[in-house]
Image (tube, rainbow, N blue to C red; front, side, top):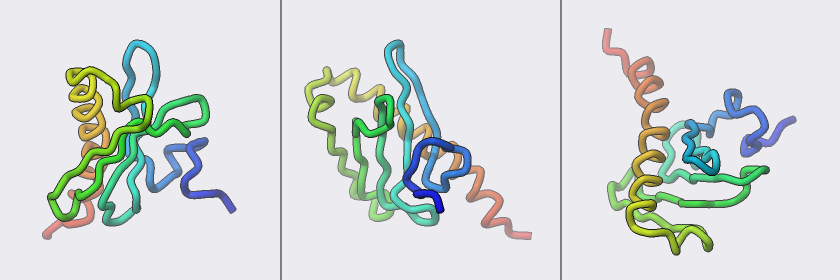
Length: 105
């Protein structure tokens, strides 16, 4: 049985929400839960184990971003770019699933 947190096959992982890239690396976005996540993680690194950012409070609306150790020292414009890209990746798949799941017809 495979680990649902494993990043090896992101298309089959129900927690996987998407990727984005800058000129140096690739980032993946993973939800905390497959059905009603309250947070998501932005990960990078060869094994996908370098935590860049964790955004929590998605269900309550009380959003809180926690930056990884190295990443907390980024310039504000870099942090804003990562946050925006992460939210786009997270919600781009969710919108597709939500429109199919909540069809009113």
